[in-house]
Image 1 (tube, rainbow, N blue to C red):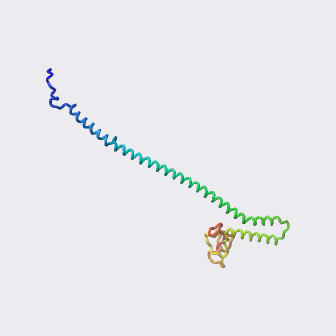
Image 2: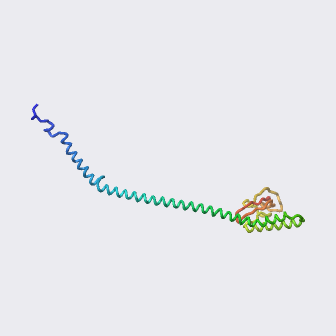
Image 3: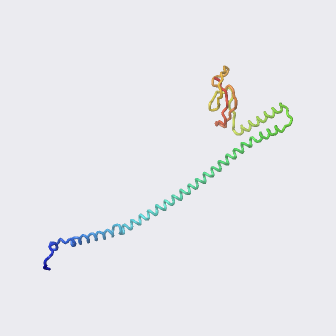
Length: 198
């Protein structure tokens, strides 16, 4: 074979390697330009630093919010415990005040039982005095009696155990009281047990 014979592809200039070389160099130039101003360049570095700074600020703000939340939760827990203690103390004080009103009544009942010789009349008089003392103690606590014959029947205040036909009483009126009711202000402590006339 003659060395002077040339490859027909070389003569025509269609060598795939030589055509690929200019394309590769163009890609390299584009990549270098991209590195200068793209993802790996100064602009990307500045953006990364800005994002890092924002992230740190957000983390710091989150930390402050978390601390504030924990502080508020602790304050609320302390408040709840304190109010529970205060409520228990108020209840205890109110109970003590109520008991204090009834102690003289209990003392007088004990004295009555200690009497060896006593007439029925004296015993009755003593019981009446203790009853008056008890009513006075209840009044001091704001307790009032309710349920008397002749009152209009009210299911919010009275508990009807039976009905009777009574020509002398109006309809739906308390004819008889079996057990008095009591209330403190508007709150019913015990309903009056009554018989209602039809």
